[in-house]
Structure formats: structure tokens, C-alpha cells
Image (cartoon, rainbow, N blue to C red; front, side, top):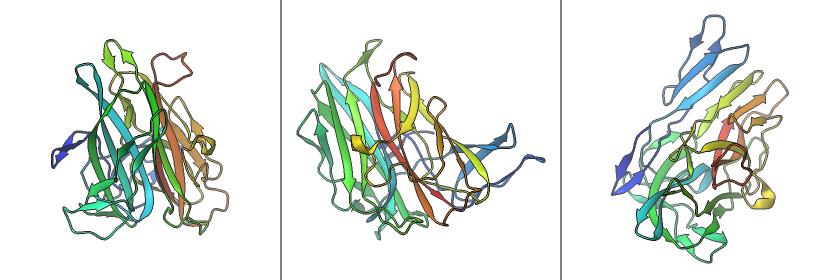
Length: 292
């Protein structure tokens, strides 16, 4: 991954769509690739492991929500805490290429530890249609904070229609804690997870969520929790899914009868200074769709 710059707004990581099912012939190690995404599959057993990679572009977003990511990197401005917050959002929206599009007029607001609005309106630049959901977009902004810790979230009313037929509410929440590691402010983990992962019914899959950390901290993944305001109405909606928190690997079995359509995966990605720590330095949301 790299850094793309659009209108002086740097977005640190990148994403493309997996619009087709990528299947592995275990006997021949044959890989089929979706034309709009890049994927590498390694067969170490009867269960394929998917490693999803992508190339970032700034783009646009959506009136019917289709998932997203919010993360940040610490900057340094004297004694002040300055962070660059970056986000990516997917959904349905008509727009003109290059135009600035509002995500339902929603804002990124403090919920715990502060009373400010981080971003008055979550907007993205229209780039291109990259999924059957519509458009994906990203943007960054600088935020100055003197709080030792805070939580902020981006929330709204309507996901895209799920396999169940429901359109649930959404909430993506970040948790920031002022921490100096080796003399530097802490940055959140980052991920380059695709917006949509297509799977074939009747198979078992393990998806490796690509994660990294600017500071070299240990990164873990956990299910987002509704009682913490992290996932709106889409908490744990993928049936029989199992998350390996230390490996950040999601395994799910579609041999059971599943309705055809979209299922949401809502995960919090967190970094820890030491392997024995139980309180994270920071927590960021990752929400994406599985298309059965």
C-alpha cells in the first residue's frame, strides 16, 4: 500500500473491490482473480486462506451505507496532540466525478471524554463506481486534541439491504488514548481490507484481515460490541463466524443454508504496547460486507 494525495488530503492506505468469488483449487493451487481486486490465496490445508490486498484511491460515498474504516496517525506540533484522521466509506450515491459528496450529512462526533465535533460533515470526493453497491470514497483531515482520551463515532440510519431484507442502523467508533511510546505519540492500527468479499455458498473460508501498526505495536481484532456503541444494528450478523483475535482471521462456514445476499462484519482493530496488556492504546472500526 502507499499514500495517495487528493486536494492536499492524504489517505494512508488503499482498497479495491472483490466483485466476484475467488476460489482455490486446492489440488492444483489454481487461483482465480476478481477483475477489480487483487487477491492471493494460499492452500495450507483443505481450507483456503484469503489474503486481501488493494491499492488506495480517494473517491466517494453513499446514501445507503455499505461499510467503512476510520483510523488516524499521530503528527507532532510542539506540545499539542495533533492527529490526522483518515476514513473510507462505501455506499450508494449519485455524483459527478471529482465532486465532494456528503454521507447523509452525518458528522463524526465525540461521545465520551469530550464535547466537540471532530468533523462537521463526513464528506468524500467522488471518484468512480467500484462495486455493485455504488461508490467508495476516502478523505483525511487534521484534528487537534488536548484530551488525554476520548471516543468518537459516526452513525446513521440505513445500511444497504441485507440478506435478511433489513436495513439496519450503523455506528463506527474510534477510541483514542494519549500515549507516548518510545518518545512518540501513538498512532492507531491501519488496515487495507476490501469493502466486499464474495464467497460461494457451501464452502468454509478463512479471511486474513490485513493489519499493520505505524509504531510496531501488537495488533489484535475483536468483534464490535453493541453495548459499547460500536456497530449499530449489525453486530455479529454473519452466522457461525469465528474470529481469531490474535491472528485477525475470520472463519465462517457457509455449508449451512444461508440466504443469498449481503452479511455485515463489524470488527474493532486495536493495538497494544505489550502482549500481556489487556487495555488497548487505541481502537478503530472496520466494517465490510460478505456477499454470499
